[in-house]
Length: 364
Image 1 (cartoon, rainbow, N blue to C red):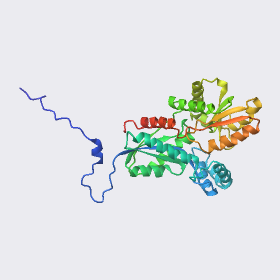
Image 2 (cartoon, one colour):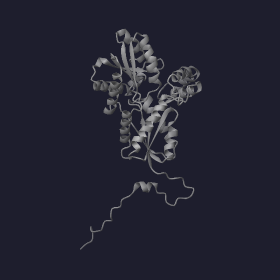
Image 3 (cartoon, one colour):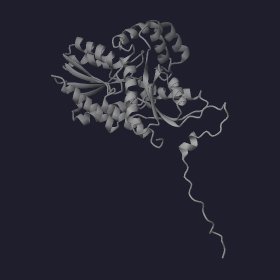
Image 4 (cartoon, rainbow, N blue to C red):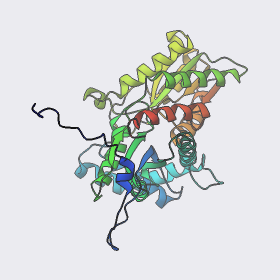
């Protein structure tokens, strides 16, 4: 009888991949250290100056306004204007704006304070079940830089890193440029980690519920009822929309979903865009013009929320809650309230932890 087909199969061998990766064996004395495998999660935010003085503001604004994702004019046209005119004056006005909201106790901006807290709370939630996860945070402009954080994670053995840009609605001048900077840093690394980038979450049910709940909780603390809720988003030039950037559409979808969740009529909620810069047309309606016109139209009591920001910053705390409030009241408004960003609220952190688990699925 032939033995063909009756060859005995070897027993199944189970490979401990973690042990295989971390085992070093008899390495030469001068061999680079082999780190234990870990997974990094990085929260990315827009950026902040290191101080409110002229030179700190100039460095920060110079980096921000030199980003081609933000200002895409030809360098030969834009840079002389930026370096010789804008950066001579704007650091003074921007410095004053930052000083009005500065965290004096820690000598830093609120954006840095809260983003750090978000990272710490996210780490608590993730490391409870996955101690191999390392959570960190970085700024697209200013410090801590994305490159410095990426290097720090690599030194801790993170060979897989998930970047989470905290921009619910995708836009090239926010989400894309944050990831651009991460990829730029990767180009300088000898041993690159595997990378994942989180996409927009503008219509995630959990995010919509958080926004609607924050509106309900805030309004419950007032002894008056707003006639209109303004959902203000950071602006971009209109041509970005016409060239295919989905930001405008995502802002309107977020607004519609929040209004539906609140059960409010269409005319009680409106979209506005803020922070325009330069002479060209940006997404409309503009927040500042809207705040001036509403009292003339009989709307004297309003609430404003800024869903494009996951963390309160100069655009919300100073531009909306200070400048915007003043513009509205001087135009004849009677009641104005600003609804804070989700920041490091526990429910928000639970939501971000779920996003992080989804982004690291298969890694942990």
